Amino acid sequence: MKRKKWSELEEQTLLSKYSDLLNSGTLPKLKTREKKFRPIADHVNSLHHLQDPITFPFKWSWRDVSIKVQNMRHQYLGVKQKIRISNNEFNWGDGEIHWENFLKYKEVFGDIEAKKLKKGFKGKKFRMVGAKVLELRDVIMRREEKRREREWSKELGSMENETERTEREMQIMKEIEKREEGFYGKEMEFEEMKMASEKREFEKRMRLERELDRERRQRMKLQERLEEEEMEWRERIVEMQIQHEKQMMQMHADSCQNQLQILGVVARLVCQLFGSANDGLGGGMGTLPPQGLQNLQHPGGLGDGEKPHATSPSEFL
Image 1: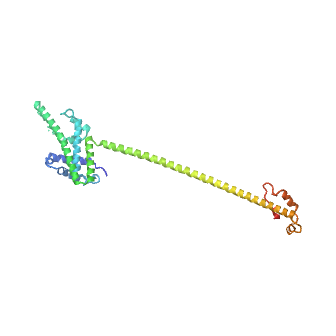
Image 2: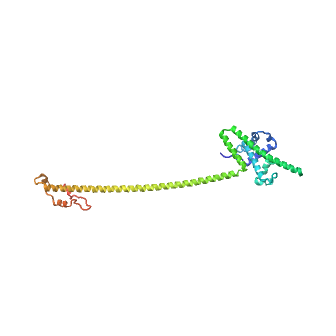
Image 3: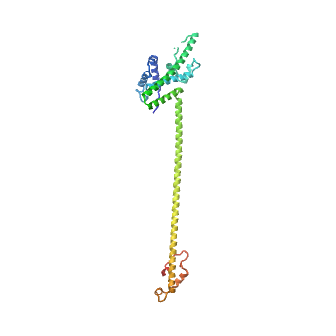
């Protein structure tokens, strides 16, 4: 929610209306704050907010006017303390150096000019009494402000629910702190510093997030590359295993074939040596040819790295 802020024209209208009611004697006759400040709020709203709600977007309540008047008086008193020379003397000419609107506010909230004082002992005594009266007036005004604030807090407690009352009390505390400081510049400076700090923190966090995101992408790329290399390595290993198994199976097949060929030759030889010429086993086989005897001396019938062919001993099986 946007914080309400008085424009310069609204402040001048408020100050002028308040001065008129004060000088006419109407304001002191009104007993409650609402009766005192509601006519001022209606007057300001009718001249500004109701005429031009875009330029003057805020509709002021009598509570807003009451707080603003207290702030104006407090600001005037703060500058007055700065130009104090002694307990009873002030350098009024330096007021505008500290605050350009000091004299305007002095006309409303300032001391009553004694509009000329008598000379001599009586005049001096009168000035001393007047200074004491003004001092006493400041004390009474501060006490009155505190009393009104307490009354306002009681009114808020009876009219609003717990949540709204808490928010109002916090707002009152903030306004009191601002009045004690005497100006609003520090708050604006603090807000700007806070926003700048939050902006730097946000930018720092964004840079950190970008760096972390970049590192995550690099790690993902590295992991993907390692996984691809591992897959390629596994494929090569599997291919080598397949080739090795093929070679082992081929060697095993060749070995079995050679063994069968040798067994066939041996069986043929046994039949020829121990068989009878009239025996059906020997008669059907005939004599072993010279090539068979040569193969008996070289059972494999194969050279190094040479596979069996059609003339190998397997033809006798």
